[in-house]
Length: 146
Image 1 (cartoon, rainbow, N blue to C red):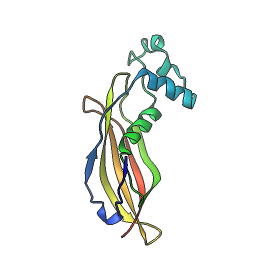
Image 2: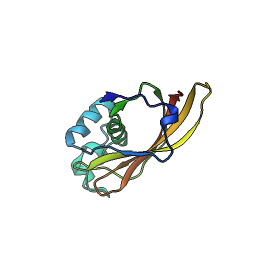
Image 3: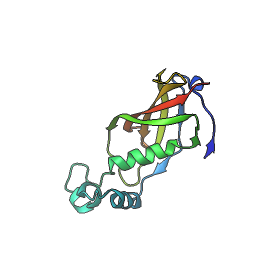
């Protein structure tokens, strides 16, 4: 992780970056359940899941969001602030042993309420080892102008 100043003017529409991958483990399931209190059988009960359509435990969507967004945090931009996330969707299930990575595309730029800042939207796709999109969202940023 390192610091890199990227100002509003430096962001170019359709610029894309791709993260490294991360394999989802059973430990991830247990730790996330402990952090959130979400011990639903869909995530924790292998025997019950064997009777369900996917036949195996499904990763918590919020865990995949957290890990996928965490993968994008390879550089710290002191000129930008996260305003939040929009349009979050869990597209496909993720299972123990799946490897995910994130692809981030600059999809929008606009004005901010304060003239010294602009807004940037990063479209985030989290993708499994089969090339399938498993989660999508838009990351909203407020970025300082030069």
